[in-house]
Length: 273
Ligand SMILES: Nc1ncnc2c1ncn2[C@@H]1O[C@H](COP(=O)(O)OP(=O)(O)OP(=O)(O)O)[C@@H](O)[C@H]1O
Ligand SMILES: [Mg+2]
Image 1: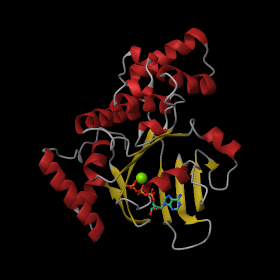
Image 2: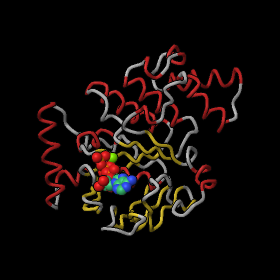
Image 3: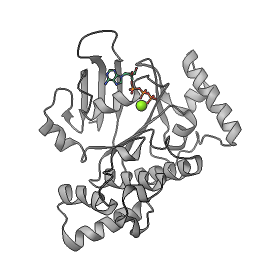
């Protein structure tokens, strides 16, 4: 059974007005598998990830089927979703502040999911927090800092540590490096790549940038105006873009690569399938 199976997912306004925002998309992820979701701004990438975890904003509704680790997410009650979130899937957002409380020290925030979901207390909890910080390459002293006292890259590392606390089977990362400067972006991408491999986590990675997607995934789904216009191995999409929209994405990724002197690692088969 797939870890995540999305079939004919549509996202519509509850009022019933207008066209579907996301229109009958389907994809599946096996344990440990990675998929890049790419498309222009407004194409429905973020709403798709929110529908997968049952977190759509109040004015929107989803139809179709989202089976996450054996649980039907569409139409599920909050109590059911609470069980699934964290354990089956966890999310890292573009802006790390989304996941962080500005008034709580980072160590306490990382401790919270460890306490709640893994039942750790006292010395065991303290050492788990230290291990969680170490895993995302943050120094132990960061535990005593408030979010505004560390850099943007360190905040995102702390948010990643929180997302990983319950050892999710699927990590959803929605433009996790877009708010960071370029050198820090590369470090955070390498970190996600390493952590996903180390924990055999599946990865649903959202970006509007094919060059960034190429650093962490081998398979892509291209969204345009809420529709899946292309899906397949990244290497195939790059060499044979097909539709006009995918072609323009590939062309802009190439221009960016030339500018940054980077080559997408499209033939690297050492990453999880
Ligand atoms: N709460 C909402 N109510 C109504 N429409 C919404 C809501 N949230 C988003 N939308 C619309 O749905 C469409 C898809 O939004 P979404 O946030 O999924 O895009 P995206 O692909 O993630 O874009 P970006 O790359 O800018 O993050 C957009 O046209 C947006 O205006
Ligand atoms: Mg988005």
